[in-house]
Image 1 (cartoon, rainbow over the protein chains, first blue to last red):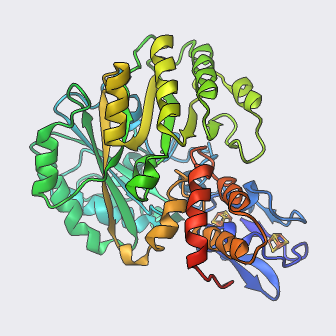
Image 2: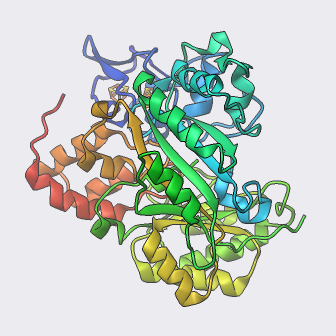
Image 3: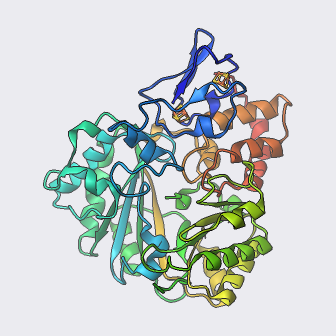
Length: 241
Length: 215
Ligand code: SF4
Ligand code: SF4
């Protein structure tokens, strides 16, 4: 994003809207710090500027900077990686797609959330740690999959590493036998990450919205607790195509 | 990804916060789904949501979109996200969905125990659960939990902690009311699940406790 200095009247209204804290005063005008900006589009979308000084910068769709927009702007449809969106439909349509069947577990690691944002090098820290532990089952429908240069090492394509985005999700499908290893690896790499990440697991339910004991036992054994609120697929979907 | 399962807050506050998603599955039930989704959205309206968005618009009910525009914008593959501030409302919507039987995936984000009760009461058998195992890494760099109660209500992280502080400052200095401050915070949410009623309650609780300087 750029702010046209000659147009800006320095009212400062746009500054608190920026989730990256990337807009600050310089010579009594607002300026976007380009390295910190996620290209999320929020400052433009909220239409707060009284003089229309905020605009998409000409480089916003140039690769690799376009990755910023793609992973940060909820309204962006430009697909550098050829896959729409930050993540996949994961558990949301599982009653129809059955991607995660009974007794199988899905894991999602969303780096940069809540709030902090991250450099794509942080994704590499996690994909490398997973690869070192022999975990390479990254969901093929997820954009991260196509960003990995070498699945054996978890290395991302090198030109991506300096880009900063609001968040990106690493998704895995794992068998119950592999889940403890995955959780242990994620716990160990947490200290290396220069941001934060949310961790979630998903699985099919037993009757009466009963969470499979096996999943909870593994989660507890690895020293994790789970929150009282969750995302629940109500089982009302069916395939019709 | 709406991130709705990582909403933060006390149990008492989360009792008044249920996000609801209508979600066709690409390659499985996209064909001819537009009228079905539209019918489901009509059911949502009847149940009284406190916010809503259709993925075709990316503007929520507090950023200049009229309810009929949401309905008109629905086409094949549109997903619709909404939020309720009470148990009765979400139950009403789910009851209507069950009766309509349109075969489109429906997801609720909320307290597991409450959703379980509601499902039992109306005879639904939920299929899949996504559980949050919390936040990890450099958590000491996060804004404090009370600010995160607001920022995590926007599923895409578009509500900046700086804006929450700015709104608290404006309420404290008598410039705006808690409700108007809440609408300022709801506006950037491009996933339509920011709950302005819960946010106004939180602002009323919090603003007397804070002095927020302009940075
Ligand atoms: S595009 Fe997003 S990150 Fe960049 S200046 Fe605007 S609000 Fe901040
Ligand atoms: S809102 Fe517009 S005029 Fe005001 S500081 Fe920002 S860019 Fe400048």
